[in-house]
Figure 1 (tube, rainbow, N blue to C red):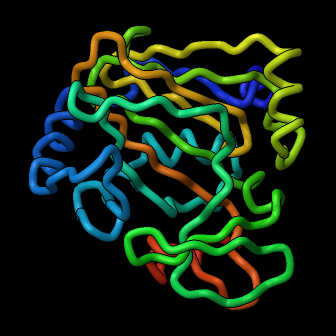
Figure 2 (figure 1 turned 180 degrees about the vertical axis):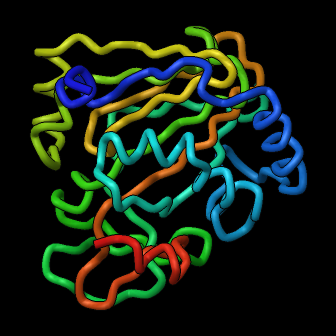
Length: 231
């Protein structure tokens, strides 16, 4: 836990069982990928929704965020020979909400796949983590994610600050095996290169939050029952 708070990410090995992986693979076959990412899976897929609230994943989230956590977003990423892209250094700064309600510190707003997204204050993102569940092996040459450790502790970064972090801190690549889970803070700088040997690199990215949103804003993919458990 000390390392996670210091570095902003952590690799947990062999978290997801073979049976769980088979269920996830079966559930995702009903969706057709039209690009590199498949969004809104908590609302679109019952198996993914149940898996996101499974005891093993909730335990990981609770150890890092406290007892009151809920899954609020799920996206599937896949790099293949047909869809092989480079992701530049960035932070995950947007959340998905049910409707646009202007609040101080929230913005800019955007629409993705018909769902409202907004950049919240850094304090909201600091009460979140993401779990990257690897459905396939992801070796160094298959677009493994890289992190700049410690960068999550500096809040939202502008372009100059991102360059400064890249110059002063060596990035760490984080390959993973099937069934491994990478835990990460949304504010950590991360990137992934094009796969030099592209194969399926399916990663189920699930975000968790430990606090509600102000002024009537609601997480887009969280159920009303879930939201009542976030204080």
